[in-house]
Image (cartoon, rainbow, N blue to C red; front, side):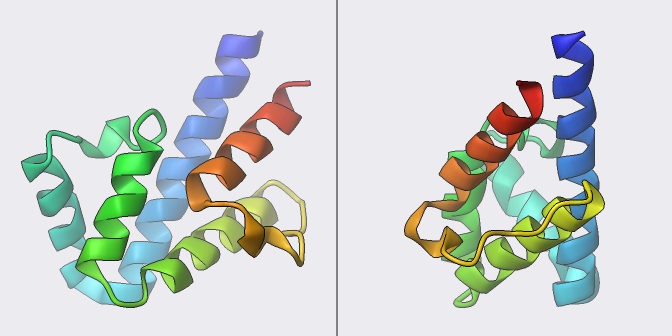
Length: 105
């Protein structure tokens, strides 16, 4: 059961990343995936390699933290939850890990 929840969460995370990148960068969002692949991270591996994805966003876009917040907000919303107001005290990777963990309990 836990594996199914994890896979469901990972799928939801990838869909949210796709939607936010497309909404934010249009077709140029595909360049982020190309850059990630050049760093040996495939799109499907983003849930397991969140830190590499976070680093890529920060290198690729001056607004990387804004994009991270948009992904978090949309991810929480898609799960029927509201993003905490003081979430900026944790890294993107930590916030996703905390959400994943809270859903598995």
